[in-house]
Image: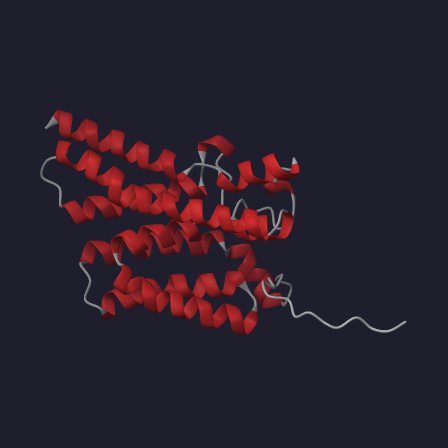
Length: 216
């Protein structure tokens, strides 16, 4: 029993450390020599990388941050779970996902100043409940492409996820863990919410329309 508890602690710390890999910070530092937390919105996430560094670095950042969540709830969970006794496998995976998201939001490497957890939450959801994730992604896409607000799309998709999980009769532990994860991420969006209310939130335009040059 003691060894089982020890393995559980080791796996939780491992999930946190994987989630805390500072993708956006390293991307901005290596390509532009800047601290991503000191430019733009100050958020260590893919959207701020898009604004401060460029589209391709932002895409790479997004993919890696998503993969962190997928890796933790699939490969890492499968490595550690055989050493853990008397714990439901799916609950264990969900808890590991929570640890990974917490790592992304509060990374030890960046003095606990990380991103808002959306990309890693997406990866966790892909690994745990893709059937629930799909409607949430549809909501994100609709909101983003009608408003160009990444924050608003993310907030509404995060709110929708636990609701959809309930509607799809998902296990109670998935509903509870997803509620905790989404609540933490929404809390991290509190400044965005204030700016949205004041009409001061920055829009993100991915596909800019090209205008023909005017004659001089």
